[in-house]
Figure 1: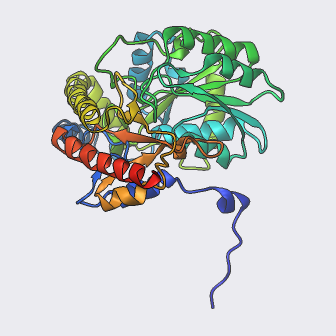
Figure 2: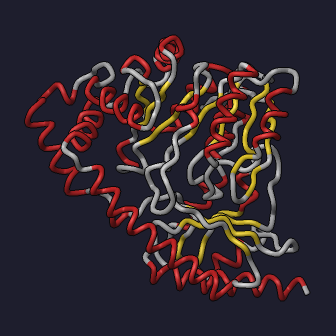
Figure 3: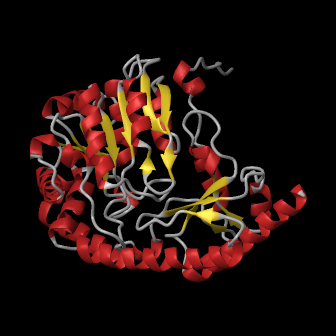
Amino acid sequence: MTISYSFSHLANTIKRSVMRDLIALANQPDIISFAGGLPAADHLPHEQVHACMEAVLTRDGAKALQYGPPYLPLREWIADYMRRRGVASAVENIFITNGAQQGLELIARLLLDDGEPAVLEALTFTGIGQAMNAHGADVRTAPVDLETGVEVEALAEALARAPRPRVGVVIPDFHNPLGVRLPRESRMRIAELAAQHGVPIVEDDPYSLLRYEGEALPPIKSFDEAGAILYLGSFSKMLAPAMRLGWIVAPAEVLSKLTVLRESIDLESSQLLQRVATEFLTQGHLEPHLQALNAANLERRNAMFAALDRELGGVAEWTTPQGGLFVWVTLPERVDAGAMLRTAFEHKVAYIPGANFSPNGPGPANTLRLNYSNSTPERIHEGIRRLAEVVKEHLDRLI
């Protein structure tokens, strides 16, 4: 005899990310997949991480395998890194997480009660919408520009509208899914708006070090004089996804609340992984790793631009990121990228339809996100050739 489970309201209402399902389908060996958000697998620092793991286990022994508080040397490195980027921060302002997604979940727990407003970008990373919706957010959205990111005055209007939002979230650098970045003036204005309206804004910044063109821009947090910006960083893209480490920069009183909230989830991050990451960073491996990784990303982005221009020039338009992992493609208005996906799988190519990145209802159907970082230039050229065949077949059927 088996029982029938009665699930919670959250379990019954939260939706699995369509993106995760699509990525699982796309991970077949004969499919060229532009669907994931993966860094270049062939440029992950395997040898350096292996050496750091051995060094940590040799030096620290059982301490590296035990429970323990957030690893102080890692917090010190992060605090120094943030200061070098213009953010006034001390160790007491650094909270270690198991990746940026856990940071989003904890911040949503911290600030949201059911039915309260949260302001998100009209197109944004699916994990942001999931975290906010899981805690019953009444989601408001601000439009995004395909060259300069979130439209700041529309964001101002959303923050000013009653009832006052409890939180906002923006992605400043090499946006997922758009690939664009906020200008310096927009960053300053967002910090002002957070203070003016008394609304904490999360700066979700996993991509800023993946820059291969243009100048480095200061974080929004560097303009924050009111303690209203909660900075969220991650080692997943700048070092390796499997490290599952990220961090929050926030006032100390915020971190004390986060510490208690986290106790019901997993208590703490892995001592082993924190120590290995610290060894990697303090041994000076990060800068040469990023130089090689960003050189590969630039080559692959250029290969995608060339292939798109050759195969879909005059048919589609796309963003021109100076870093990160993604290109956003806009097709003719009559095209439905979601409906086209089945044909794409038949042609052995995969992408994510752009409509899936809308946190508040269906997004633009004629758009798609392409990841270029995890494919070689040769596979990019072949994959875009296949994608162009799919688009042209779809357009022919619409005539």
